[in-house]
Image (cartoon, rainbow, N blue to C red):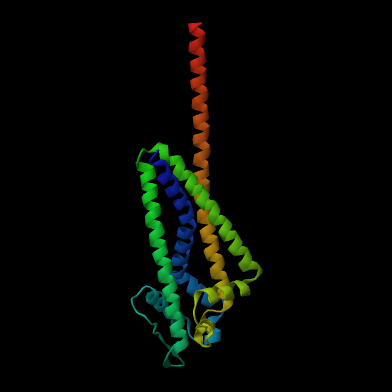
Length: 247
């Protein structure tokens, strides 16, 4: 009885952590995806709008990812255009990338924290008193997956129906300045359509992962429920048979 309330609390915390864990994992994955940058550059003809060669754009993608994972406060990328080297970003753009890096660092810390908690809870549920808590873990996973799908469906619908409003609200909530709209190569490299695709990728990756986990957890709950029902029926048959023999 003493452990019942803490276990219930831990189970709900796991379910509530799962959406944060899956979403931050998706954001971290795509932020470090070299393919995301280069495919976007190709899809939106960034070499035409910027005048930079594909080799230089590939370099930009690599150095941005390196910057986001480094200890440097400010980004510094030099590219060559028309045989002339120059600094790619303006001062306002550099400050904005610093702010973006801060958000990505926060994303990583949330990912790390929720990941550690989820791993500990799952390990305890699977190893401590074993089957007694497996269904509890499955229930928490199914609940968390359902919450994740509901959140992704809501955000995805908002982005599909009104991406301008969605993207503007995100920037107003996330940044204390308006350097995200600074004119320069940043907006040429990453047009709004690029971010629309990125948001959809993140939402889909998060939703698909949640769906897979939910199907596994739901399947386990359904299977063990049928197994328990079958065992109970078998036990009842045996008991009735013994009573008949005694009679």
